[in-house]
Image (cartoon, rainbow, N blue to C red; front, side):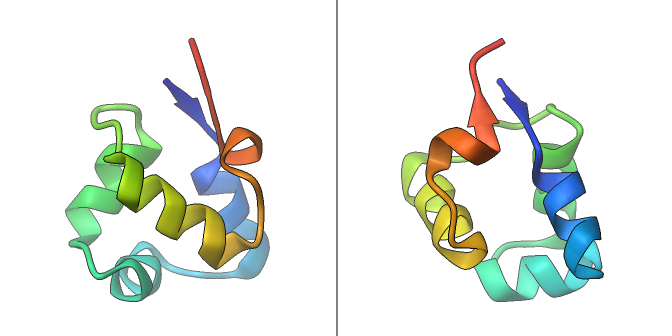
Length: 63
């Protein structure tokens, strides 16, 4: 799965640690999602979308 999480985070000037804190996950989890090593669960994907005020499809896409 591809994602635009790193770009969205950078646009807002957020660190991985800050995003992790907002999502209640580890910084390592944020890094793994951004690098494509980990696909978030559906509940986490919804939390990410809500935090960025975007539909899930604008953040994540199929390979």
